[in-house]
Image (tube, one colour):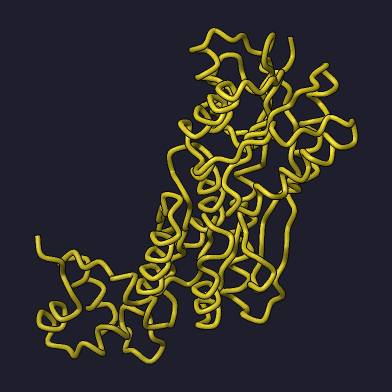
Length: 336
């Protein structure tokens, strides 16, 4: 069925399109009787206003772009829920794009959002530095950006929502040591992600503190998938590196490692204890359940949404870095 337009109402009522528009927008200078005729005709013909066109007329699209590395795990969907908690009641729509951990796809997604004339962008980037010039260009073009979880370098002037990766990683490693583990392997993820460096530094700090350092225990992965975690622990075993526990950068890497250990009939946690960082529902649907640093993902999304709204409403509002509280949740993967 064809959409009823202002031109259709104009033809039906023999009024100009400008008169119709002013009547629909409740212009104070419109004749009340004329406005009444227009509103009655709009109801009769089933006219529905084009919200996008009206918003653009007043300089806003009421669209916010969301760029995330993946939507496979619950991580991004939890953050999205928080974003929508804030934006939905205000009439904003969230346009979701996924980079698939590929900076080139992320760049195309950002260009697409710019073409959609979004009012702001909330982003969890997939590479710390490759798209810095794109971020700068968008910000200079008055599209506010808020980074969460994985953030760019300090040269990018924008608000950030993060957790204290290094301190919390240190707590995980110390927990493993307190359970009697001394050969703690670290599956660290790609070095192109800032959090990877932060968490490995936390790991190294505690290993040095207890004189347990061994570079052979650190394995870097090419990606963030279950398969990457599986390959990492397989590499440790193939190289005959002795380890009694694993601290993984993320739940996905930890679970990939767990799956391979199960296949090799290696008992968790009796032979190998495992802990990770992320704290999604994935940690509770594996056996044994996974000890992990639980991040407040919904609150992270809410905070990012508030920060982008601040910039939309006042471009000169100061950039902020908000550090969210996390909790180390002890589960059966580390505690016998």
